[in-house]
Every structure is written in structure tokens, then in C-alpha cells.
Length: 303
Image (tube, rainbow, N blue to C red; front, top):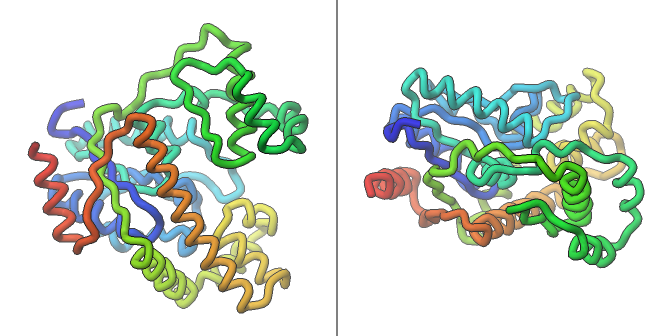
């Protein structure tokens, strides 16, 4: 990729101001934005995923609204569509600015990911679903692992996925992964102080409820999406669905949803720190105005 088009990545937890900074940077650098958000790819999941498309103005964006809400979407599809977007950006002279909070997608762009090609193994998953975390960890320690594979051990679900990858790799010893799409990307992270982050999350949740979040979820249910399908998307869609189907009262719904969003932001930061341990360099920006953060990014890019 031509030097002038070297990509920039803006990452951070939910409600940290990523989109605003990415748009400001794109306006300065003749850039376009590629979303790295695992829920914004779905059409009609708008308010709950915080698409905020009005913020983009004239800045081109991709990887938003690319699949129907009934479809499944994974990191392999994300990489394929991102590669297509990068080719388009290069032909138009747009500098790629990747913006989002899905660490798995960003890590796959920067370091590549062997697991992107590994299909689900229903029989193995059925076998392992009742295993304890300790049993899964012990099996993972004993399992031969693909080269350069660092398994995510943060949850039981991810431990099972790691074992699935190890099992597949053992049956495909000659497989060679594709090189990463953006190994030289400059990465800038937003990480508001805990209390500021909590305040931003709480304020944004109120704004989304006032903007019609519950009406959006009710409309999705009436359009034919099942409660289970919406619960799969988590957070706003899970708890709104539980409230609308009578499984939670209003106060419990709001309290649980706010608590889970705070926990989600914490998990995002945990993943970003894991990325650093895996060798990915990040430039963390101070909690300042967007203009000051923009100046810090532009200064860093000159060095």
C-alpha cells in the first residue's frame, strides 16, 4: 500500500468517542472509514449499535449495514469485505481509517488470524459444552497448537473455540494462513478514566432510550425476527427483548442493561491489553477534547 495511504486504526471501549475522532481525522487526511464493529454490520440494528451515521457527513464509510439481521457474520467475512474496501479506498486515494471496538476484528487485520478459516465443529462443541473451565484449560494445555496461535482463554465459549481450532489444525498440518491485511497500521486508543467512561455510558444509554431504542427492537420483533435471534446480539437487543416480552420489569431492565454495558466496556479494555501483550503497539491518547486528540494523532503520524 502506498505510504500516503498507510492506514490508521482508532480503537477504544464503547462510548469513548471513537467515531467523532475518526471522522475528524478522515476530514484532515482525505480518508474514509472502515468500521470494526461486530454489530454495526447488521442492517436495521441502528440505535442499539450506535451507528450515528449523521456524524460521518461527507466522509465515506464501509462495513456498516452489510448483512441482514437474520444472517450470521464472522471474522472471516469481515476480513474478506475489508480487503475489498481497502482496494476501493486505494483506487479513490482515500486513506483507510479503521474505527471500532471489536478487538478480534482489529487484531485479525494487524496480525492475521488462522482461526478465520476454521469452521464450527458441532459435535466437538456438544462434547465440550458441559466441561468445567478447569477441564477445558487442562485440555488446551495438552493440545498441540498451530504456529503463532495465542488462544483466548477469557471465557468458556472462547476456550471451546480455541480447542476447536487446535483440533482442526491437527487435521490440516499443511495449512498456511494468509498474511495480515494491515501489519503496518498505526493504532491509536481511547481509554477514558473509569468514572468518566461510566458517566459517558450512562448518558448515552439515556439518549438511546429517548431516541426510540425500544421502538426499534419492537419493530424488529414485529418484522419477524425472533426473541432468540435478537437476544443473540446481546446488550441493548438482549435486554430490550427481555423487557418487551415481559421477562423483566422496566426498572430491572434499565439497571441490568446499564450494568452489562459497563461490564462490556471493561471486557473491551481487557482485550485491547491482551493485544498489546501479543505484540501490537498502541498509542494511547489522553482524555481530552476531540480537537486536542486529533492534533495528537496528526503529530504522531508525522513521526
